[in-house]
Image 1: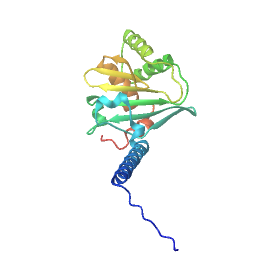
Image 2: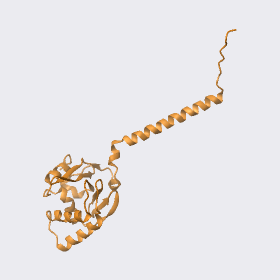
Image 3: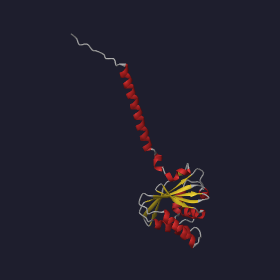
Length: 202
């Protein structure tokens, strides 16, 4: 007697169950793809809490400072649309320094004051006041850590360390001289200045 094939027709509840499982599968796949695209996003490297309040700023390419063959830090600017470097102090912008070696915060503060003296005159009392402020703001840094200065037009300079707000120097003249270390034509590092400003409007 020949064998007979019996076709089993799934019950409606089975179809519903299979459909539900298929929907769940596609939803899970969509979530995985969404997570993958987030991780792979080229903008992920540019997320910085310190520049979030500036709104719409974009980073320049990092420029490396070398002193006597030693790599010190990578610098970059975060600038808004319409930024003109000849009128830099009229714009809110950020200057980020990501360090490549260990440095003491007090040494960073002292060197900053020395460089500011190249750009303008100020009293010894003012120099000591600014130096004390920077020593409080700048910690010792290790490779990979960053200090970011934010120019606040009409106010002064705000500082952030590794994405955490450190404090504010409420002095427009201080801000002009501090950011001038990198942006002023009289900077001690004209090559670095030219690289930082490359592609920005004069």
